[in-house]
Length: 332
Image 1 (spheres, rainbow, N blue to C red):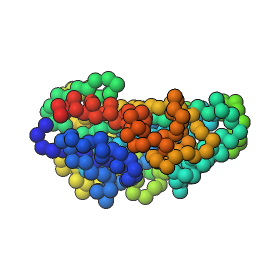
Image 2: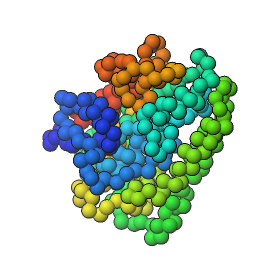
Image 3: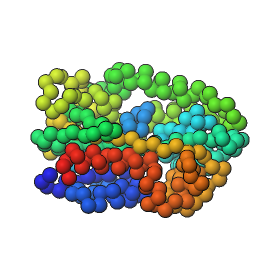
Image 4: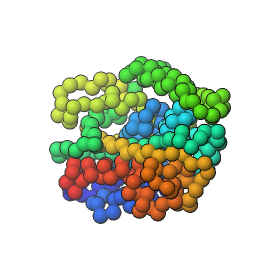
């Protein structure tokens, strides 16, 4: 593979960083975190899927740093809560959410729901974006997916009136229609047991409304659906869907001078089925681990030792699939 490449983990969550760094042991990559790049902007996660949000984070991290970026995003879907927290898992209990407050809110909402109707599903999407893939040929095996992107920030064309930018992007790929469809489905509470529907609706409306409020977050960047820059390969002759570049990336960003015209993206998804317990159990793990019991297990994820959890967890499954694809694609 030549030079030892850097991989920037697009997260400031030290629990995630610690888990992901362990995966790279023995591989010819130097792993660093987003915290090593103080100027790296926050990403507005306005996708309707974890894969979309992970891609956004990876693309902006790669664009700013000029290095390979690895991003992940996790959802927790609880059947009785109409699929919530879903993509809002990290901030379900509000802007100041903690692991404990998020888990406590889920348990509170499920208080009247009987055993047998507390099914849930964890899912993690991992996305690898290489902004300098070079001339090599790359291929990956399923279930990983490979996609080529034209460097979104290579062109200098931008929206002259920044106030019109959001409306412009909403008109591409039916972005507004996609979001409204997602909102409609998440507000159509079809569950049947004893949760407080009025309270869940209030929480859902607050989470979904914050999507628009996030557009004014200082120092944050928003990019539209990444598919608008997708092409068949670096030697494809077709024109991209749009020649307009997203604005907001610092002109002095390290990646500006080194990123290549075409980027490589590899993505995977891992899932884990289980149920929500009636109280937190266990002191290992993080996030919703103390209230999530996998199918076929008598223990929660938080009762398992790290190696046991990593053998079955949604994140570990996604990361293993990604690393398998990376080894094959980079011949390492």
